[in-house]
Length: 248
Image 1 (cartoon, rainbow, N blue to C red):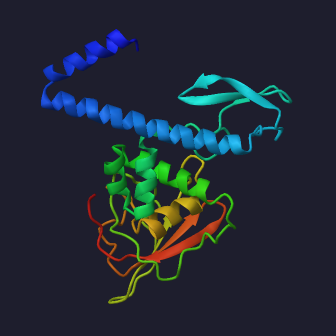
Image 2 (cartoon, rainbow, N blue to C red):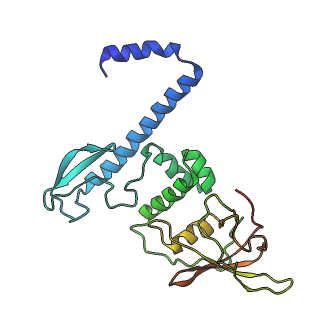
Image 3 (cartoon, rainbow, N blue to C red):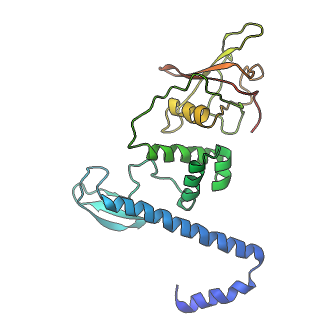
């Protein structure tokens, strides 16, 4: 921006309403957060600049796109940015990533995280999975099985639903006065395997969601046990319901 344009902008600030000034302030804050995120991403890549496809270090700068520096590999000819081939590739709204990182550090629940980042619940779920996956790349893999007594759910229908009971609302056994044992199928979501879906929702978020028309939803009670199974893998985890189903 030229100096005369900047001077006109400053002169017009007094004419803005309180609401408009809030919008301008928020836009400036978001731009600053975006610049911080871009600086962190590019600085870390430039410490060890290698092509994510052929691992060659014969790379040169090749313009910018989506606010990130792009590079070209002179060994394989491919172009890429510092996030190519990482769990954070193709994620948008980088100006909110610092807020997401702060929410993870504080251990905020998923809905609070979505509110803080001003994104939808599915987006917050996907971001959390990608951020945690990126942070764990250099760590040894842990077991996907849930602890025996993981306290899960307020089971919540509709929004954020990822699984539902089988066509008959399967109950393995049900004796008067004793907990019921349910079997729930779980599917993968995008690049997230079924085991990761269960671990993120039940073990981390302490919640399991199913649809409002799922058979047997009215019969599930606090203290019931749930076995989660994936197609061609069988039972992959189990947990105990800590509360009655409720709406989000």
